[in-house]
Length: 496
Image (tube, rainbow, N blue to C red; front, top):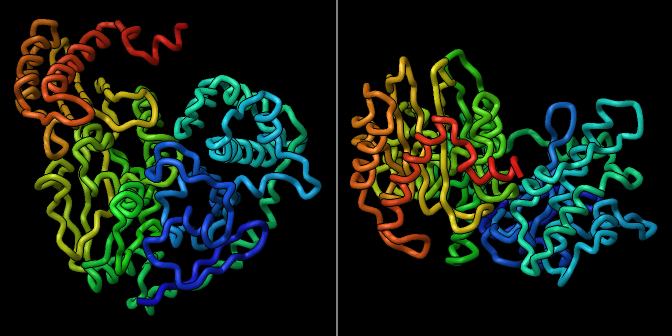
């Protein structure tokens, strides 16, 4: 089956690649086809960050810079974008980019294998800050320095097996002190605009990689090709390629559908399009619920959140996916669409079994509708994992309460890691609904929660640990509601 050519900006020039298989990763394209071997292959699953590259694409009047994992990103998905690897940062005269110079001066490279990924994650932060500074001042455009916490979050998707984090964080905070080096965004936007062509997908029904730009075209292609592998960020499907060596006859990529890249705000809810990245989706939730910051920042590393989408995470339905317990607790609904029409249902009703859902072959998950916070809302979301950053949950619990006169007027609890699908804790909710929010009532609800699910034992945790931990998280919520915030690790860091 033929594939559409891939065209993107690399090293200031338009690169065109023909006959690229639909399952070929961006890392394979870089290392094997373009011989850009500065980008390293480490884990092959988006966990270590050695393969990090930076993508630029138009956003409003400027450009959006994102560090992403090239090992689990499909090559076709960067069509129409600009691409940077570590090999493009040095100037023509051989001088180093400020990010690179800071890494050298802070002695931040040891074995060096992970270094290209760290450099690219910092380059995305640097360029974003330079662009913001140039847009808001008429001076030098010197980027605002990263704080230590900001540096740690920016590098959350990059691992150093030599344990050299301290000098790398030093470099992250020093990189703004050197003479400014900025990409010419005006010229780059002109190059990217020249790549834009009229939507040709109407004639692409026989192509191996389908990437529509409008919702109507997506629904038409889904009806024509129900067997095509649907991708929306590909941070999970990418593992099928790198670890299971899956091949796809046809891929249908929703990430460029303009309607689904939007966040729409209404009086009582926000509607998050299925193609909105996890980073942007969590940013929207944080704008009204800042208490979710620690939870959101622990959802994988930043490069994964920059590629993955909320719609893809929800549709994938992993029992240890972090977004679903939170969305269940918030009372989110999903909107499924096809050429036949649309239907809406509570998120927890979407799933029928392990990674199975009730979507028809011609349907796509289009929107996630999240209620806005109410006056009396009290919300907490917890994740337990072996590593604090960039790790998959063993147990996840999200609790939303509406407390009035010391009683639980409304309660909603979402849990993950304890069943074949993300679940709502119906029995525990019933034990709390209408009751006093008191230590005795919470202890009774803990006992219910401990018995409500029958989790499995696996490499991440035993069944007994999961039951105990889930119940203990409810106890933690009670303690925090009484002002004992110092029991949270992130709060301890703030007080240190």
